[in-house]
Amino acid sequence: MDFQDIGDDARRQYIDARATFEALEAAEVQAAGVRGGMYWKTVNGVEYLVRTSTRNAQKSLGARSPETEAIHAGFVQRKEEAEGRVKDLGEALARHQRMNRALFVGRVPTIVIDILDMLQRADIAEHFTVVGTHALYAYEAAAGVRLQSAAVATRDVDLLWDTRKRFRLATQLKRLDSSMLALLRKVDKTFALIADQRYTAVNSKGFEVDILRREAQEHDPHPAQLSDDEDDFWAVQAHNAEQLVSAPRFSAVVVGTTGHMARMNTVHPLAFVRFKRWLAQRPDRDPLKSGRDSLQADTVEELVRDYLPQLADAPRDATRP
Image (cartoon, rainbow, N blue to C red; front, top):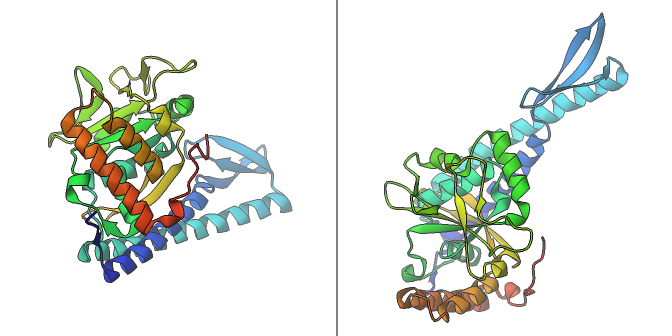
């Protein structure tokens, strides 16, 4: 296969930018633990320490005492430190993203970066796995090379919804008072569902987002909608998608054409290879698509062998539920 090395300068830049991105991820997790606030509230002449959430829920932590004063002081300190770290790392990442663009580090379409970022910001990334052609961007980022353009050319992104966690997704969407389609429209307001294909949303430039699911099993709802909003996505059953749902996970920080970065969660590259080979051999597969399936399987298999040998002996079964 014709793999293009991204070059030493771009490789060093990616490594440094990825380290900053991952440090910011960790800092944001810490900051999430101190969201909301604490304040003293006087009731009947007695001061109480009150903890507030981001949704303005309140909980009393007890009357003023050395213990509650220590709790308050510790919280304020942790909050200031966490927010300061997020601010500093955010500024550092912005500088790295400018360097990414200057050195042509990434080539992921901007719309894909924005969708991945939206999933993360909405705290629903765990429910979706990028499958299909766009997964190749994660593999090439980890290997530090560029794949053939023919292998990655596509105008749609496939998101595999894990129906085993459907109640958690529904709860989070209710908490956000939103639907999946509404969140997608925050990325691009022109996204709309196709009338007779309500698992697909397309924007004004023809880019499509497909929501897939495994074939219905005993406890799975069928048909299945992502939220209670009647205008939201209905996920489509994909043949043999259980193989992808139960596959080991693979995650990489990918870089867009503008230099911006996002985390892409997909399946282990060898699970991708197995699925693409199965797909290419289906007698009902469009011959034009089966040829690309085979090309992608061959490409990723060789990529693992030559650039990611540590992944060559991955287990065939899932590493987590």
